[in-house]
Image (tube, rainbow, N blue to C red; front, side):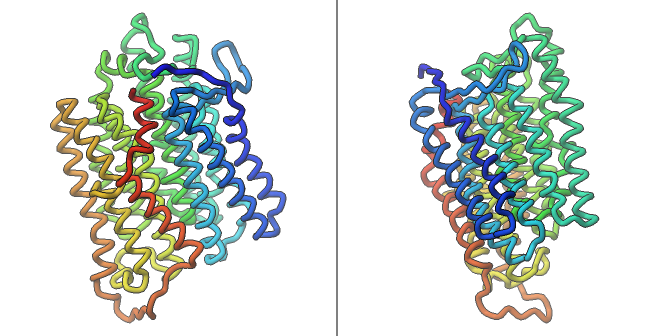
Length: 493
C-alpha cells in the first residue's frame, strides 16, 4: 500500500484535549459534578477525534503535524499511522470508561484530593497520547517522561508511608533507567544517523551497514532497559510497589497509560529504529524473545504466591507485557501481529480485572483471595466479568486473548523456535493456575468463619457498568478481531 503523508491539525487537537481537560478540572475543582463532567467531556471528545482519523490511516495515509524544531534532525512532530492508532484508540477509549468508574470509586471510598486525582489522570492521558502520536524518538522520549512525572502524584495519592514508599520506588526506577540508558542511547543514535525520525516501514530502521555491529547491539540493549515501564525483569520492582495506589490508578498504570507506554515505546523502537532487517542481521530478535520469556514465566510463578488480589494482578501484568515484546522479537508476521494486538487485548481485559478488584473492595472491603470464599454469590456480575477477563489472560476462546495466543504460537512455529512454543504453553498453564482459583473460590469456596453475605451486594452502578462494558469489549475483540487487526496489518504490511 502506497503511503501518503498528509498534514493534519487533528493530531494537535487530540494532544490538547486532555491538557485543556486538566486545566478545566483544576478550575472547577470545588464543584465535583462539574469537575467530573469536564473529565467525561474531555474523554469523549478525545475518543471522537482519534476515531475521526481511522478512515485516513486505513486508506494508507500517514497524518503528521510539525510543532517545532529543536535542532537539525530533532523536532517535536506528531504522526498517526497504523501503530499509532493501536495505542491511541486504546488510551482514548479506556480513558472514557475509566473516568466513569473513577467517579463511583472515589465517591464510594470518600477519597481525598479528588481534584488533584482527576487532573493528574488527564495529564497522564496527555502524555500517553503524545507517545502514541510521536513521529520520532525525541518526541516519544519527551512524552514518556511526562507520563512518569504526571503519574507520581497518583501513586502517592494516599499520602501515607506506604504510598510515598511506592511512589519513590516508582519514580526512581523509571527516571533512573531513562537517564542512564535511554537518553545516552538517543544521543548516540542521533550522532550516528543524523536523525531520530521514524521511517515509514518496519524493514529499514535508521542504521546503515557502515555502523559497527557492537554499537548497534549496545544501543538496542540500552533502549530495551531504558523503557523500564515495559516491566521486563530485572527492572520490574516498581510495578508491584505501585499497587498502594487507588484501584483506578492501578487500572491506569496497568492498562492505559504507564505500562502500555513502556511496551509501545519498546516495540516502536524495535521495529522503526532498529528495523526487522537489522535485527535479523545482528540476531537480536530470538535472544530478546528468550530473555523476555524468562519474565513471562518468572512473573507467573510469583503471581501464584500472592494472596492479595491486586498484587496477583500486578505480577500477571509483568508477565503479560512480555508477551508483546516476545511476539515482536520473533520477527515473523504472525509473531509481530500477536505482539502488537496484545497491546489492545491485554488493555481491555486487564482493566476489567482491576475494576473488579476495586468493586470487591468497595462493596465488601476484601483485598485478599483468602477472604473471598463464596463472595461470588453476592457479586455474581463482578465475578462473572472477572472470569471472562481471566479467560482472555489465559488465552481461551472466544475472548480477546485467544487471538494473541494463537498468533504467538503460530509465530513461534514460523520462527522454528520450539523453546518459545514451550514457554507459551507453560505460561498458559501458569495463567490457569493463578486465575482459576479466584473464580472457583468466589463461586464454590467456603465462606470465611463468621462471614455472612446479605443477598446481592454489587458495587455502585457507576462502577459496575464500566466493568461490564470493558468485559464486553474484550469478548467482541475476540469474536471480531479484524477491526483492530487492520491497524496491525498496516504496520506489518
